[in-house]
Length: 326
Ligand SMILES: Cc1ncc(COP(=O)(O)O)c(C=O)c1O
Image (tube, rainbow, N blue to C red):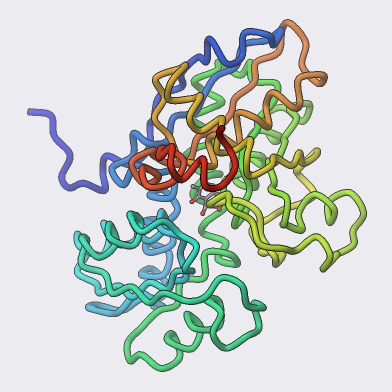
């Protein structure tokens, strides 16, 4: 018989899938690392389990402990799955701009969810950074995960996602393009790929309202770059320790409108029902087209599933209300 001993054993080894219609103007092969095949429907399952395993190993997380994290949903999903299998409790702190579906899904997996305002400074006691930190200090036998600065986040992608992409492309990958939030995916995959072949280019996709692109280009943390935006999962108003700027060759910024429109296009033109950061990522690939030539193999990573966005990017009333559609 061939079976997984529990749901966590099905994480990873996701397919690589060719894009056909949206990329037809590009000279090169564009392949999607399709992370929704993970059991929590996102790439975050990989790092969630790795962060838990490393915390168990060095005693930060103890038997029947409480896992506390500020999460926009996908990391929470991965942590919740692992907590169920391994016998932990979860408290997640989430910002109020996240989709209702994400919050309901976390509750469905038995987690307690605390919702905080988005439009406050990270240092404000109401911010989701501050609230998660405080709950971590106040809750007995708890462990505050901190995916932004936790090195196990990057390590998970260095140990699994990077090697998978290298093997699946038979070492022919020339460019890796991915949305950047905590930085774990780009830094882990990027480091592994550059160790195999330093010529591989690593591109980050950023949003308008986030500090990454300007910081990478100038070394200046410019507060004027920070303002509210709609795109979910990518961009930050802080510099997480998991963003290794030294392995990133450049960033391209995608507008909220384009990210939303291309999320719909992926579904309608490629049959790829994916989340909002996938729309941003594929638009990022198209924006970078001058960097690609005929023999290039571009891999773009799609983080999460469309089901979490049915009330937003897949709802035409919402799209019209936002001014993204006539
Ligand atoms: C939907 C989505 N896209 C992209 C990202 C960014 O990935 P990373 O945090 O590894 O940079 C995240 C992370 O929260 C996410 O949830």
